[in-house]
Length: 267
Length: 273
Image 1 (cartoon, chains in turn orange, brown):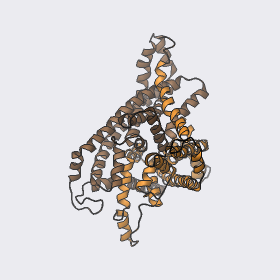
Image 2: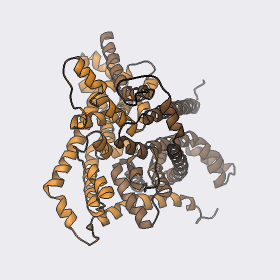
Image 3: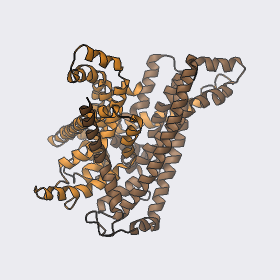
Image 4: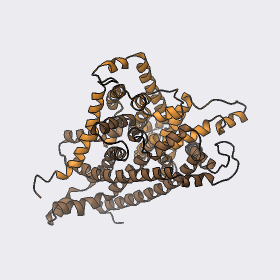
């Protein structure tokens, strides 16, 4: 084989990278400079800094943060308990299984469960709490989001816990640390990388849950993801949609090194 | 200590109940003759027959499967090439840059991928429909395939390739008879991973399906917005069963490859079995 043809088979990959990684980002940046009539303008950027979009950005990140936090609170003990079971791999598989069910089907199920005549309300009535509107508010939005993301939080934490050398825990116990101190000073710090990648795996998709805001939150929660979807597919204002996307990309670029997610993926 | 273990088990049990509740809830009401998701009136298979008589729905299921299989296959091939390319790079800085670029689509929020692909396809003049959905699914599956294959490639001892070359194998032979067989378990798991991502994707697909074309998640979204229909429940029960079969298959495949890997490692260290 001649020298020049050696790299020829690498072309599809690099082509993919240029066409589907670099070009889309450039195009989004380019489109953010045009208004809805196609005139070149910076007005999109001006309107992004109005209170409407600022509030949306803040609430978007606030919800993503809440979802990440609650997922972590639920997932960490679960991952810990998982490592103590027999047949760990099988149980882990059973945790992962629900993620293979289409997200929209699960969201759809919650419409029934949280509905006025659903089982949760019947339970409330049975214990004398009365009927409540659980659907279409921020509670149901956060609950369903956490539900959807929990397996993605459990997996990396479980892996990190499994990687801990058991002699470290034994040493900590030998040196007189209580099990709580061991958890706080030995186990938790050693699983930080898993916690971090779990948080990344939850936080980023949580920013773009526009289908849940529509189905579960009844349009009462508006996030940046919802705004982008609205601009692109409903009002057809691609310029403004792109501007929101540009800011989302920028914020992510700032957050990424802080959360240090890239490193986990690379490993 | 046993007390604490029991506490953990109870907690895990609750997590499992919550995780599976919605799924079994859907399955339970798929047999309800009452036509709603509260108050079970009687057992019926009416909704299943509705699913099987809904030609539009069947076409959509086929579309979804075709897109998933085709896009994962193509993405896996590009992913193999990508992993080989990255593995060849010697300079660390270049390698890290390429790897970060590779991961851009994995770490970007779906809406941004969807929106930017919508712009891309519109400018390129690609009609929204089968082609645009297929291309975008290939696009977001490639980095996943690369990430699954690359570690296996790096695990491979370079002496294997050297030995093959010394024995007179051509570059082509080295690739086909040494490298590819060695990384084949990783290729398989990359393919499965791409398949799941493709089957599960909603946000990206939603942006790039025009009006005439639909995949399952887009269809469920529009039906769920229109209101409760138990044929969705029946459909989800069927999907759940299919998924369980797929997962069990994947589990068996990954377990056997793990066992192989353990054996290889043992062999490398000279440990007798």
